[in-house]
Picture 1 (tube, rainbow, N blue to C red):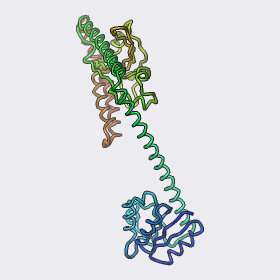
Picture 2 (cartoon, rainbow, N blue to C red):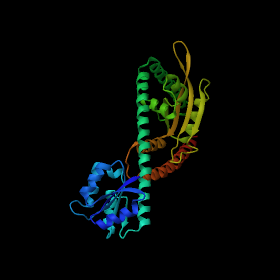
Picture 3 (cartoon, one colour):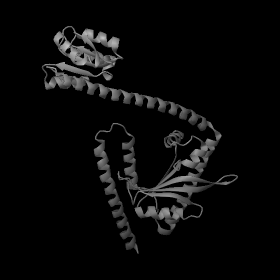
Picture 4 (cartoon, one colour):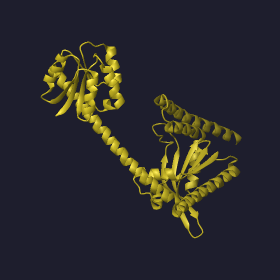
Length: 356
């Protein structure tokens, strides 16, 4: 049987509650706060609930609640305040202190039993959930430790460093091909199809985190087979039609293979993100062989890139005030950027035609 501690300086109240509860619980009686804390120390692991009067000599109920909070008991043991006279202000104060519920005098047996049962069940579910979360955290810590060890071993391994060299070489191949196209456009059309190129090689920690999140083994072979964004190149264009023209010219080269395309310009993400993503298989020429490497190539307009940079800051910054409103504003800005990009493109076309 579960144990209940009844704390009230009026003997009649203690006995009434004992008579209501003794068929279902072991009932411990305390006539003031000091006795209540003594019994809590003795039975803290067996106590299902505390019924607590607030107005008592020596140590009142508020002091008991404060001590229970200090000892961490109030997180595990529900407290139900028993009182004859109560104000809304007092009830709110008690809830803020961590009290679970109230039982008002005079006592009605069924109400007392139901309120206690509800409080006990709620805390039981809460404690079980907290225990599961704690166990899962321990499992994740162990997994994280294992992954960190694997990461450290792999980071120092020669095959991993060689793979990173091959990805860097693939980035250089893509950049060279883009620069050649840019030079050709400059000669043919007296303008450049893109404004700038940005490249990045995914950090070892990001690589290993993604492998673990996706459930892939932490090996060199797994990186090569399962990840497509280790090597990334971003091309910033002035106008949307330059994006598609440049992408078409690039993927039509006979040594480039298009693995996958995601067009977030024609089909934006719900948050407004717009960009053209291409996963490419790109050849690199080593001393003894030709090897194909995967590279993620992204195309954006200048305005799209500015928007994505701002959205990225929001995504990875914690505790941002009014985050939902900022997300809404970013979506509005994304829609405005799309309209502006095409308006600017139309103006450019009119200027180009007037030259002829």
